Structures are given as C-alpha cells and as structure tokens.
Amino acid sequence: MEITNYFPGNEMELLDLGDGIKRKVTAYSDNLMCVEVHFEKGAVGALHSHPHEQITYILSGRFEFNIGGAKKILSAGDSTYKQPNIEHGAVCLESGVLLDIFTPCRADFL
Image (tube, rainbow, N blue to C red; front, side, top):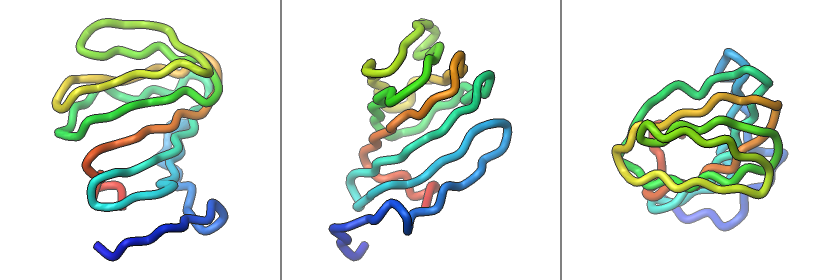
C-alpha cells in the first residue's frame, strides 16, 4: 500500500450502510485504520466479530455496548477495547458518532 499522510475530511466518503448507520474511513495504512461511524437513535450495530483489535471512542451520543456478552451503557468521552475475534455490537440510545480504531487495517472497508 502506498503511504498517504493526509486525509482531508471533505474528500472522504460518508457511506450510508442503511438502517440508520453511516461510515467514513478517515485515515488508514496497512497496519492501522480510523473510522467515523454515525448512528441514528435506535440503530443497531449487529453482533459480529473480526480478527482485528479495535478501540472505540464515543464522540457523541449514548450507546449500549455488548462485548463478549457483557453489556454496558456508555456516552461521549467513554471508550471500549475489543480484542480479536470477540463478539461485539451496540445499540444507539441517543444519536451519536463513534470513532473506531482498528489494527491492522480493515481491508473490507476500503
């Protein structure tokens, strides 16, 4: 992958995933990826797993996360960590935006 150092936000596409969720890849390299995920109230990030490590920072809104079967309600300023292959998902209680960091890069998002 060619190294890119700048990712102007107005050049990055906000992709409508349907069901009240939109995603924008904000920056990436082979080993790291940053993604903005916009949720409408009531939208559900279905339970899933993947081989990537993931940190989620809640920029705004309120969410009920389910990580490995343990549920917790979090809001702006809170964070989560998901180890590889753990089942996780979220329900949006108040519309908001998450910032997801993945390692390595999620090639399926590009």
